[in-house]
Length: 143
Image 1 (tube, rainbow, N blue to C red):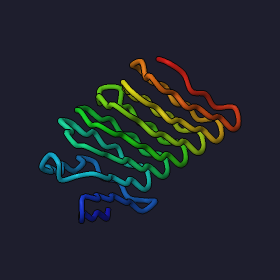
Image 2 (image 1 turned 45 degrees about the horizontal axis):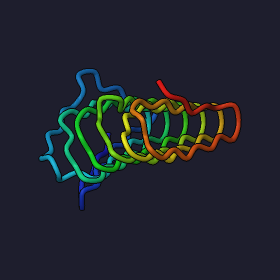
Image 3 (image 1 turned 90 degrees about the vertical axis):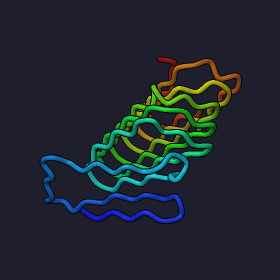
């Protein structure tokens, strides 16, 4: 496993044949993290997230769940990843899914959502502004 953290960006990567049975716990101070990138097949649970802006990028088959509050939440998914951010309260959201991934999010004001492929974006909340675009057999829908 390889990880790095600098300038508010945290990145975790694994090689193809790495098995970590008990997992790792990273404790970071609220407000110190603005971007998380997952490369490979990690499973990450983020709790008590409090930030103005937070960006999550998942490349591969990773799984992530998020809980907390942010003003702006953005997600980039490439592959078959799954992100459950339905317990992360956000005012605005920007989501892009490339492939067969799934993103669930909670947004109250504005949502910009794009799916390329068979992926899905599901949201809760009642955003006042919704911009949705689907290229392929994917979907963007209210949960």
